[in-house]
Image 1 (cartoon, one colour):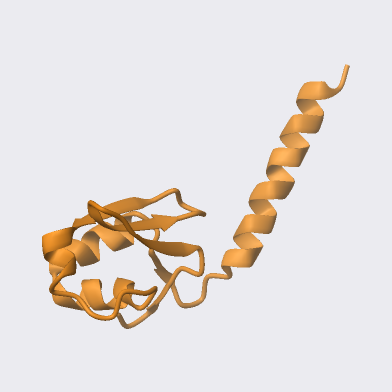
Image 2 (tube, rainbow, N blue to C red):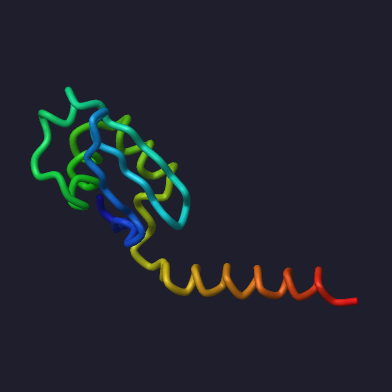
Length: 96
């Protein structure tokens, strides 16, 4: 998808149900049935791009759930920022 890249925090897991895509940053979760998975190849993180190209509904789900991000976004900086914010909030809660 032009202008977007696959999130580096995407994990792909094959289960008895089918394929589970999980984004550890956005907490996005998508399940794809075994029947749908049988039509797909390869089964790895490249599956995200493949799904987006295959079906507009998948593309929307992947975008909405953080599996794709804009090319200019620095995900590591976002994680650092979130952690710093949480640490500051925790310090404020613990201070007298």
